Length: 175
Image 1: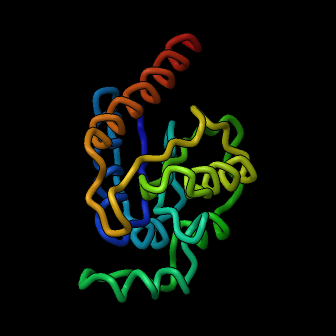
Image 2: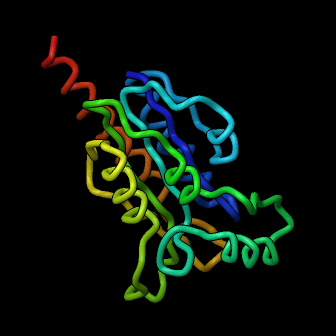
């Protein structure tokens, strides 16, 4: 199975989840992990499974304004002009039968805080014609800048193994 994980990260938390997802997917094939900036400068993926995620900003996907705010909170370089929102908005429709999964990171407390980058990514992937391999998945962060909540990396890896197994099982039944 060939997979690609594309992510947007401000403080490193979403990048860490993307790497954990990639580790889980590697148990069933090859995986390419790309930041959204790298993905924007490469051709559309030709993979069995595309996994896309980003941080929850202002109840959904980041915008240039929210990325500017994040840039004020870290010394790490942050791409201001492109995020998952813009990358998906510029994406071509998915080839028939293409599968994808959506993930996001969001602050763990307060638990009632609405919004989810994962759900926003999932909607955009469906609009592009992707079949979602699972419901969009949120991973929790302790505070705006992190770190990841305890156990979230392991949960991301386990989720990815489930995605990979499901895809691998589906392909096996086709042959």
